[in-house]
Image (cartoon, rainbow, N blue to C red; front, side, top):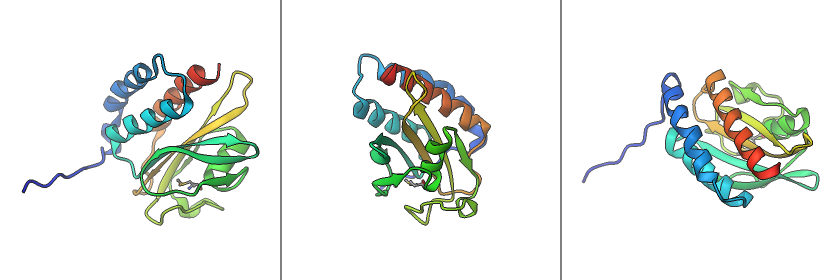
Length: 164
Ligand code: SME
């Protein structure tokens, strides 16, 4: 029986995939303004393109981050402000790229397989953080400025679409 092997895309080859992914996600969003539906398809599209270890959103609800749509293994459901990479990205209101999660003080290990991580906040038109995108890799130092630029662009599309 044929075996299906899924390989992640080497980081050097990602730029070309992002070129297709960014417009693909904008067209997936067209006419759909439900946050859960938009986040669900965005995580699926990113995962189909790159097979990262974990791709998902957390939403700011009251004073914590609550797990939203994701692709990957089971994850922690609630994260406090200024805790872990996600809570810190929310608190500092900026993208955080972590080449080695073991070197990030307070990193929350939902899985010991996660080795590097990028977290990007999404804001409303008043600049208030409404949600965050979190992507984990099972490889050390797996995210570059290319990932950061393209994923920030995807988050900009999403935040304009959902929160403006
Ligand atoms: N590692 C994150 C927690 C979320 S999981 O990785 C899905 C953090 O430190 O905030």
